[in-house]
Length: 195
Image (cartoon, rainbow, N blue to C red; front, side, top):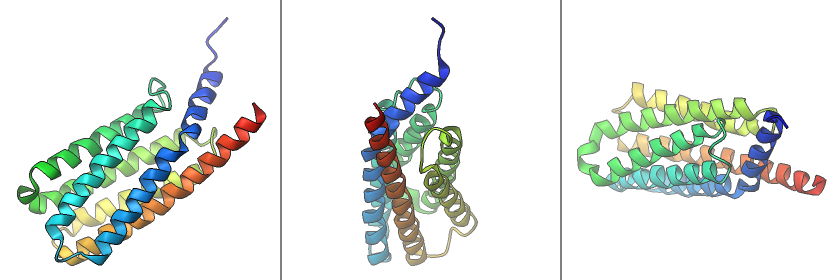
């Protein structure tokens, strides 16, 4: 009776697929955030700071929920836990000190987007043979990295430009995660039929 790593990985990935709804909620939240950011970029700059803090906080919570409901003890899911903790930290810091964040807020957004993107790419590569739809997670990760680099190199482009960029980023991120969730849902449905 040896330890079957492949069976353990398959079970872990099935748990992730069963919780496809967490990725769907993250995608919907990102879409809502993106539309609001595009509609009200200038008058709501400080609100945008707070909205981003709330988005990062909730996104972090959903990443942690997805990790723990997908068997966080598996080495493949600690990336989701780490991503969630980064989101929680950035979200709390932004909500507690919105006025003091100013320009630092933009650099934190850049660092968060780059870290999140890298972790999503790593996660997608690790699970690519076990699920369908990993391409969307890779695209979301690449988009996060590009967005983070843009904000890091051009932090003073103005509140309206940053609001529009954040809105576009969040909308695309939301679309990618909704597509990923639908792929996970399909994978889960096929797996349930086979069971």
